[in-house]
Length: 399
Image (cartoon, helix red, strand yellow):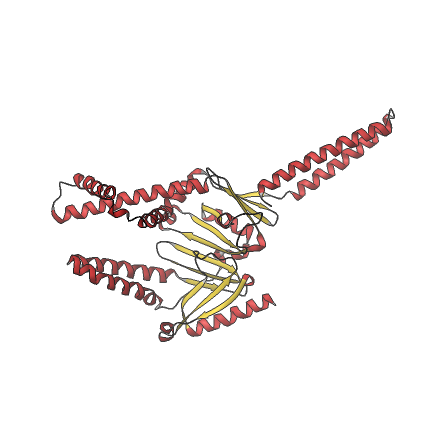
């Protein structure tokens, strides 16, 4: 039951109790007549029963707000997220169907964009003018993307509130359309935390969850399923929400173990091969700019692979299975072993060549776009030991 429907049902119940009270008063009037002593005894009895009912309602009404995001937090969430890039990508994909690049309006817009930025940099000449013009265009596009991200977050997460009522958690958010979602605490499969580079500078963390059901109760669609628990909050706020909902899934209390020391090389090679293949036609078309661009991209790929592997780690106990990774944007995912559907030991031909393997825990209700609970690039002996321990834990909980 949603918070909105709960409020309506409670209002109807209060009206029914008021009607019942009026009926009892009328009954007392008819039965007692002018007997004031009997009337007083019945009135005291009714007041005592009403006080007991009110006390029972106060004890049973345990719902309270766990987290409420104000406007400043929503603005920070928009600045630290990349929702604007998703909007631009969707618009580009839609426009691709109509071949928008062939329209005269698109050409005029591109010429105006580069012409306006180039005019501001006319004091520079040659390649420096071209470089600064390109950088100015990139900065302008970044500002537009951030503005779109802030707008999307305002529309979807304005007035966000997280409520807990006994064993049910509910959220409410939205600027134009208020969206409600709820789920039983027993259906929470795992917690996912994320922190972009800008969010780390602001000391903020994003918290969401995965629920077992594919769609919410009471007719909610997949778009309104329980997902976000804290759009963006401080570490203390996120920790307080986790301890209230699932204290055993708190990642701060886990002992993290690193992946294989050569894991960064395994992560680097696929991206490096793709970049090298793309660099061949670019070098043939643009000459010197192809190798120069390949050098810059390779350096960034090495930094990303090393940074990702340096932070990548896992934690596994008889009750918890967790993994973290990331470079500029970091992710954590934590799940209880008893929520697992299956434990998989994965080993590709490249894994076998490097004596590595991966472990994956599947849980119900996992979104295809979420951070997977998969630990790659483990030493093969370590992976088999972890697989055996996790399999026994899952089998024990299912049994």
